[in-house]
Length: 377
Image (cartoon, rainbow, N blue to C red; front, side):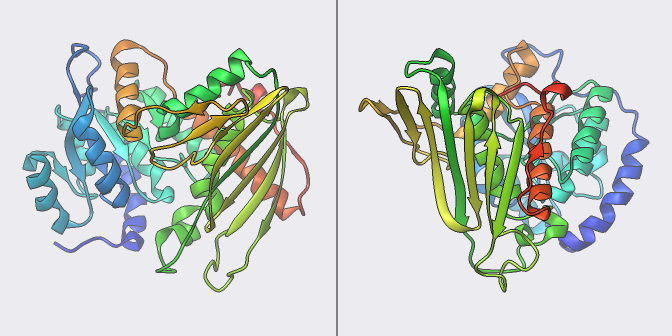
């Protein structure tokens, strides 16, 4: 059996969606399980994020565990089976993925594939009766986000987006300060997220067909998120600019983007994202002080400080572990879903508006997020 290339895999997606539409399997999820029982998660896609972040995080999780894998690379199967004690019956290929509906060991499917594949596998997972975690960005269009949300609602399963920072204590400390106002109201927020991309110019993140965009679709969603929770409101408009210094490398994806967001009460937000600059900072300016996280978006440990000399510091824990445990508690106990599908859709609306503004020469694009009922921060 040969390893499936991403190009070949894209061709199979359409076939898979048709097959998934025929599935009418009953729920095989953990909705009726005891609250103290761990739920099984299957990782779809065994790239670097699954290998070095999600799988290790699941080893320390209190409420979930690594129950299965889905891969297009047969050589990885035995390695993962032995390392994580995964039985053969919980190992799937992309071709037989839909049969996961019959596996009671697996309660949650975590889609960790290139962006263009998120919608297909999230929808198929929902139709198979599994709760869904879809890695960020949720999809490559607002329409795909809507399709994922609808599929999960129709199947009666829970949906979350892989926004690990929503479970991070540093993020929640900034949220607390914004809400409790120890330095007064927020006046300005600035967030930067980026890294220098080197090596293979044919990697999937630099292929618009697979990624749906460049730096904005990858690191930019972190800047969008932190601008929003950094002032506690959704933006009401956005304008943006794009620039490139290595067009020979970034052939058809955006290299660097800056954007300006307008928030209610006159709050100004600025974001920068790049695949050609190291950037990892959030700065929130209040009426009588400021707070900064630097580093802000990386896997940790993070660091922060305030204008009165206080350090923002928490014991380091795996963000991925916290994120997945939080989602399981939402499923079993009804606790808040910190990163629901509506949040992923909101951010994709903003992404599309940023790209529109760039295409129209930096034009201000109004956003009507409140009218859509998307109010989570």
